[in-house]
Image (tube, rainbow over all chains, first blue to last red; front, side, top):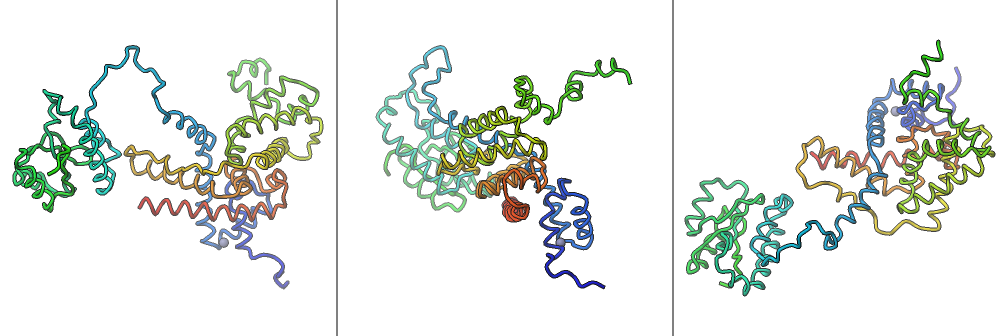
Length: 218
Length: 199
Ligand SMILES: [Zn+2]
């Protein structure tokens, strides 16, 4: 019996190294026979072989040239659209409506995934926007329905409809719009009850966030 | 078998059956056959673009190196001795050109952030997982050296053996094997990482 050749590498190491080309069918007869023999005795290499096949599938399906081309084009899509003329008629000048804008933001699917702290920031930013634009808001006269809202509230995800109704009743608030995708409601509270309603909602266990949105300070 | 039968075959199949192999095309290119060169270009352009995209980050550079590579093929087709496969010869030219180009124009510093690719649209679990997995693999590839990326792409996408790869990148076969071994470790980590995210 011949002694095992010590200068040779362990069969496992050798086979493991060759697995990618075994999987793609690129080994010559001798290499393939060695890997075959080892695979029949090594569960670890058999497991790795299935990973190799998965990697081959992924790389075949992947198109870095499309990814890089798309990234390049996308950066142009995200550029300011001011230069692009979509409609043949010039757009009608519209009065800024911060309510509608903020509500539109809160209704976006992306916002639904935001953490409560991030939402609080969105709402706070909206409130500042509102207070800045307050003079023009006051001249609106016959305001659309959402502008009667003066508070925004978000309930805990596990709050039932009954919970929501009870909380709103207790605060003396009525729903103006909602729920948005982020589970936010726009509320109207009589101005003289504003401070107490806000305090009630903010201490309510079912409420995650309650904030005035008409810019007035309580 | 009748010749008329062959001539009446559908066009695509006819084109494939009648397509001269790369070896013949290169021989014709060496005698200045522009038509043969165009066919060779059409044959190699997609594969070379893919290969160069894994090596270079600047899109303009990819185009430039692609053109340079094909110009060398046009000018030196007569030097092709046929001891290796034509694809090995062409890819080796592209690899050397890419290395030189990268030395002149290093990769842009900011890394492309593949995380942004994950869409905000709700996707079925399976699709979401697929997208995350692909994103994780692209990111892992991005963190490998260009030399490692070349070996990975030539193995998994282009389906080349380690000897051909060694010839293309100009290194010993053992280096190809160890580069591949290292790269696979990273890619598998990325794969299992994306699975953990998903669960
Ligand atoms: Zn093994």
